[in-house]
Length: 238
Image (cartoon, rainbow, N blue to C red; front, side):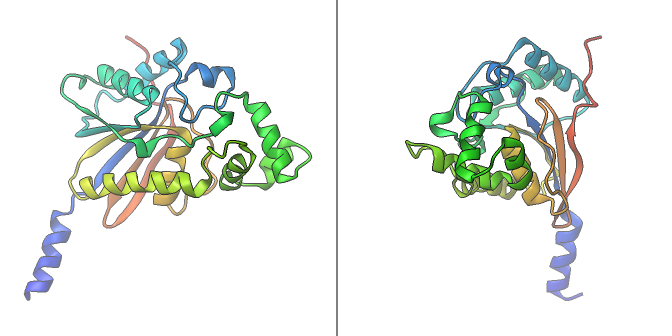
C-alpha cells in the first residue's frame, strides 16, 4: 500500500464525526407577550423554566462533551437548567459565543410583533401581513427590517448570517471528527439557518418551539438530520 492511500485509509478509519444537539431557549416573557426579541434579554417564564427542565430530564441519557450558548442570558439560563436535570451541571463549562445571537431588530426590539410586521408589510408593498408571509422568505423580511429601522441598527440577512456562520465554522473546526456530543443552546432563527446551511434537504422548516431539540450528526464529510423541532422527549418529574 502506498503512503498516500495508507494515509487516506487511516483518516477514514479514525474519522469519528460529531453530533450536535441544537436547543432553542425556553419561553421568555417577551415571547409570551408576543414582542420582538433579538438581542433584548428577558427572563424565562415559569412555564418556560418547567419545559426546559422537562427537556433536560429527557436528555438524562446523553453525555455532553462540550456546551455552547449565545452570550444572551436566556440561552445561558436554559443550558444551566438542562445540565442540572441532565446531571452534568458540576462537570461542564458553558462557552458563550456572541456569534450565535439571534438577529438584531434594532429600534423594533421589544415592539409587538403585529406592529413590527405591519411596518415590514408596508416596506415590502403588501396589502396584508398574511400576503407578505405567503410571498416572501425570511431573508427578504430581515432586509426589510433594516430598511424600516430609522436608526439603521437592525441587521439585514447577510449581516446576521455572516456573524452566525463564523461561529459555526469555529465550532465545526474544533469538534469535527472528534466523536464529541455537543450541546448548543441558541435561538430560533439562528438554529434554523444553521441547519438549513448544513442539511441541503431541509427547506422552509417550521419555526422552532421553545426548548425543542434538533440533532445534526456529521459523518463521512456530510451532516445528517436525526431530528428537528422535537419535544417528544420531554419528561415530567417522577
